[in-house]
Image (cartoon, rainbow, N blue to C red; front, side, top):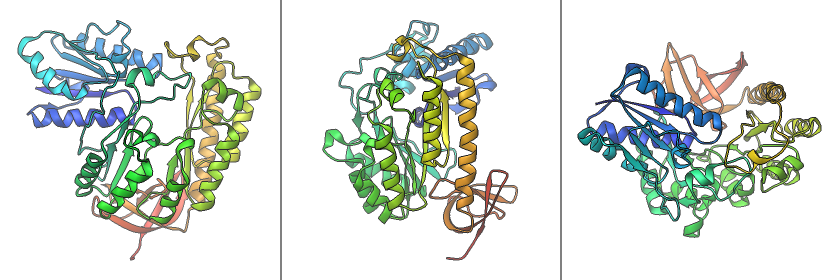
Length: 424
């Protein structure tokens, strides 16, 4: 059977999609692109916005229109909060039993009877996916946490993925050991990664420290972490251990306290700024990036300008900017004062322009420094990789894929950092 996988969601979705793909391939099936008219299309759905949900429906209908007998399987968050608009699909699997998808496909191939598995997320255990696949083939993701208890007013994720839960610590270590034999960098990921280990009475820093002790050479990166979870212990570990990358992605969402309050975010701007200043004091040169939502309900021009000035004050290395998109079922969807789409578009454009300025400023500050990169792609006489600070670098030399190299960051031009390999 030829199958295609379409991922519409976050990094955790991508990890789970690759894990399922590996299971299917191990069962003798062949992965192809969606455009190649596969026998089965598997959509890892997203429910973060109404737009994301609509994309899932669009792909479902497109697959059925192009090839009537194609098997369609929709998986994940949007299925979990199913609004009844996915019934055309042959297989629907919610957030609890994604690992069963390969067996459900085998079952459907035999009897062609529709399958529905949208189990309750009450007390659902952590789903221990494993995957050896990553697009760079030099860096890999390791999902160690799932679910969220935070209930931000704009977010459907606690309803779509359930409550916080973590991978059992010994299993994390076993997976890290396995992955470290093939990859030079492991990215620890989850829906709320910084909350790892609560049910085992350990912290994210505790499990990272164990990984560093029980593996060799592999670099450890945290995909994203909330400001309230960047502990002094974590900062100290990043400061002391060179195998911890000097990069943190810390969502902000708004730089205005009144908007943060409406968002139900668990911090204010004073707390946020004090923590990133502490991080920079302890780890000079660290890269800190963030997420931002523009045009949240009732966001006035003055509130937006407060956010814009706060972004400049924080000197991020780059921003991920998203215009607020209504998601039914969330508290924010019921708020008065939804912002005009054109206003959201203008605010988003202004923040993206600021992000480009911040990005250039940070990159230029690193010119002439030494760095360690992992050779991720080798093409047309160039090797590309990322530094510890997540700076993408090009070297005009074909280096050995997957190996670590010390480089000098020589120049930054046209939004690209160029480097030269040096001897240690």
